[in-house]
Length: 469
Image (cartoon, rainbow, N blue to C red; front, side, top):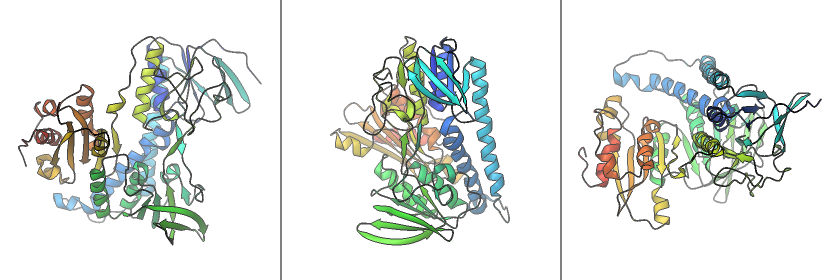
């Protein structure tokens, strides 16, 4: 039955994913009394439970397995017969997730954020009703922050069944390695999970509707990544659509269409990874008058406030890229603005990473975008094959590409394909945040031998004076 309203909170956050839990903690640091509503048993949202963290755990484990079978001999390490222990690999993944989600619970306790278990529904701009089974509780609050994230998009004719036609959630927990896997979608999620199961022994085919993989990233770097993945055994069919799928005798019969030609093929499992949709319905937001766009995203102003005063939103439920770190930054900015501080997110320097091997990381503009807007630019590249540390690691695939304004030399985009690109992109993001020129990046002394020296060399190449090629 309905409970009486509790003591007023300064802020109620709906959702405990990266955007929500970070916002709750920052708000508590700023002196607010905060509650965070979460419908799932564990804190952390999609990212920590069924997204970023478990996928990276499996990527790292599968890469070590692949290295043991194929790469260690080049280093003079003889390991004999290498066998896959998939249950142990999956258990390790689950332990990593558990430690991190419990860590959020500890942070909530430290910062006195009240965790409220159940499904939150906005009843007004100052009240959130939380249903947990038969029990209901109403939270009275001065502000509400919607941080409910996103969910996988299903395709017509390929409805998720959790057994043979999978979303990314089920693809993280397959109990056996499929003999053949179809990945529908050549973006980050499809390529990462396709890589995992390919390394573990599955024959993986990736189909992509467009004429390129990773369509939001630099085309040439994406083409280089595709060639690298093809060498590892993944196969690609571009400009191809999966029209329908039926499960027959434990296999999935799939109809593929490519440039007007239709073919049939059979797979053990199909992973549909064509993007995500905002988790914005069923929150009560529409009912209290919150405005949405045609794609179901909640509209906000520069302060992350909706058209309903006191109701805010961040992360995947609002327009923009769907990235955990973007949601985190928006969460911090939103609550700082609530507190009268100068919260801000620089959307021009949000890194994007595909955690394959090699990794592809980027920040800023691509060549295609610069050409489209008519910006004159200079290009500097440096291959990892010429980098001493990469040679020593036997990780020589890929390159660093820096794009700089032709007149001012300001860095407009950085793209890295190679080992540990996800770590190296931080230097580029920091430089671009402070409006660095390629000369600014080229001047500081970089430790030798290290992979980031390739960033320095690419910056020197923009200036026409690389030293090691």
